[in-house]
Length: 419
Image 1 (spheres, rainbow, N blue to C red):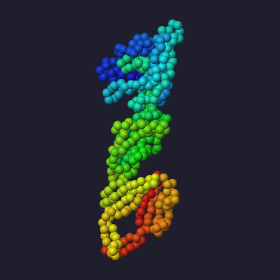
Image 2: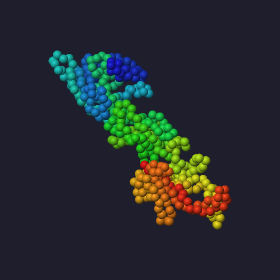
Image 3: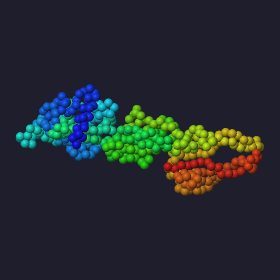
Image 4: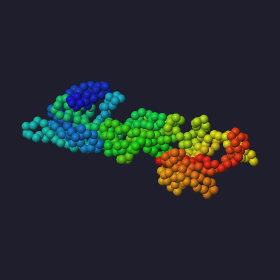
């Protein structure tokens, strides 16, 4: 326990030694601010003449930023001193101690309990502010005299000479996005990390497509785990083409969107879609592709509340021209695909099964063309419909024949996908 209490003293000593300031322990610190001298009567070397102890309930939990800390103060009787909450971090990169004030100063005057006492006591309540952005991932807070600096004497938490400075770990509604635990797999699965995410919020990882932010959460927004690590499991969308994408993490409960630092590696993801990825779909991935020995070409465009993709295939077509059949190689229409949208959007439209689960039907359009559709079958797949149109096509009169005839056939025409 003693070594645990002394952690910050050792960390500060090590950090300051690295930066060229020889501070080996609290006892070795040679200077102190005026407020510390007022409280302790001298440069503090232990906790015999002064101490600042944060109430235990704050030390054993991880309260949220903005909390009011309650402290017990011991010091020179009848001398008013200024106390403040201070947030600090020992940086891993260079061991420097970074710190910032986290409250307005609070004036405290220790009083004797008995006339014979040499040390006065007081209670104080200190309202912390919202954490500065650079401290939202590793927010350690202490209460010290308002002019405290790492090079000045620190006030310990008791008369125990081995004791350290009381410290509280605060959690934030704005925890800093720490980026990927590992880059997304070829099938688009990934985990994003947050540190010290307040359990009062739920957090979502999102990707920007065009002007829209698209949630990628596997099971919806995740509740913050408090102190420590919160893991956000996500999945990139089917058909996401190769490129650089902006990403962010947001607190959807409290409307906090600035969790991903601008200009950092966390802000962007470079994605390369592989054709053997589960995310590749020749019907919804724009581009020209060689797949299964055939050439495919897909383009997509906005359509109502979703996107519609047109897929063509390089094929030999039999065309009836000037009284004869001719063979022509080129791009031929294959089908249309409507990307996932709510089933309710297709009410009144038989191509989407009129928005009804398991729909099957046939109809004749106003132009006289016949159609049929099936939804949620083994052929269409769950949450989808396939539509076919009756068309006249040329086919050989027999296998291997070079003469043709015109017949009516059902031709695959489009796919509708539901969310």
